[in-house]
Length: 392
Image (tube, rainbow, N blue to C red):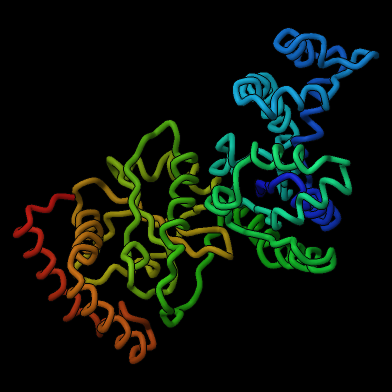
């Protein structure tokens, strides 16, 4: 089963995306609908809301007057938080029930307006954010919901802004165009990413691409790592393990294939082979199929003293290295990263050699042709560590 989180600001068109995904075959778990269920007449949720906000939030027939409640909470942060304390646990519990009832090969899309605000992003395999210009959203809220501009602005201000949503987004769908454009983007997402991702998660299959010529540095690599690390940390809880960004994408200015390397520090390989491996696979990080994925260079080799996981997401190449604390490979990964971050001259030299090897060697820069240079670079890094008192 693939768990997808779908979110977007009020008026962004998130519901249109959910509808299109449902037409393609996704199972939609609609948090707004569930939120209405848990405060239906006669429910414990409604009784608790009345106790907190008085019967002024009830209609004449005893149902929740959502407009009256909204007027209270959207202008008062403390009142809004009290309402969330009542409703959010109930919505999460019911959402979990519906997701658990889905077939094993389902793509379950959780439509969650406040996904960012309540910190749910790491619990999904993929987060999709629908983004629309504020002026467009204001116009839609006036047209479709009859809101005044002041009311619509309050609703928008009460939610996370676009920057916070983008920070957790694996996919951003822009909805400033027409419905046909939005449908085309959703269809491509479904076909090219969600369906193969679901199959890979279900079969515990890591995506392995061929050698790709390095491209220019990507300034979003640190943010991509942060999302992956949060997802891994969530999957491995309650274990609180050290997680580091290593490899070329961890050093600003270096080129690379865009594969995000994540190092997870474990106490032993037996620990890595146990429950941690199963949790990683279920979260979308299955064991890599063979040792050929490991390309750290001869001077920093692990000698089999690690476990390597890949990513099931066809749209996000990743390698997760589970290494024992204090092992040579564990130390080398951290040393090379910190050395190159600290020394611009070494970073420039590394970049030059990497480009030359990439252009001249079909197997890529970590082929046998790189061994002499890699050994020399390791010696320079060790000298830097001794000179600066570096510790991992």
